[in-house]
Image (cartoon, rainbow, N blue to C red; front, side):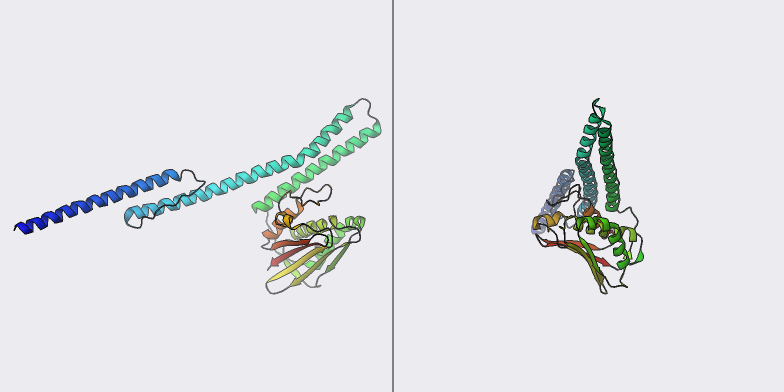
Length: 302
């Protein structure tokens, strides 16, 4: 009887000890969850936590982690949007500084009593030119912003590529003639692509224009295309100055200039071209060799 009582007493002590340990473990887990929630108030980082794999606390931990992950993603999206707007305003401010300074200077000269009629006309023309440049820049920045936000609807039409390239050459013909750069194309007569004709023409025109600007007299810019069952491959090549390797990763960034930019260039055309191609589900890449030229490869999937 005494042995039985001793065994029962030991079992009771063990049960109390196990209950205490469970309570202690549960309290420790609760403290860990509380500490975790405190640390994740800084949504810029998501700290790791030892997994609680059992019971209701484990379920609670899993739900907390899901909520925190969702909040962090929303925070990151908002942070990226704010940074984008901040960068955009900084870029606009930088780009407007020069024309605004020129306009201010010309205005002061216009108000000078000794200025002649011919000088007044000259200064007024320069003010008009700078104002036009700012208007163009604002319009293109708004367009690029809409493209990046995906709010511009892209049509889906069958486009005869050779006809589109000819339209581009016609539009840039005078520019190429003045630069003494020849425009050449080699595109199968019946080759068609699917997309928005206006925006695809804008993208390709920006790239061809870039080639003309960076090709010396006697050079050429060519457009060739091939097609298979997966995609249409368009190559826009020039035999101009070429681009250093260090600049290639940044070539499609807004306002980026690769060191050999043309006079008056603001570095927005290639950024717009890339965004248009991306919005069509396509890709664009550039390869170049200094002194030999640059090649832009576009792939349109349909």
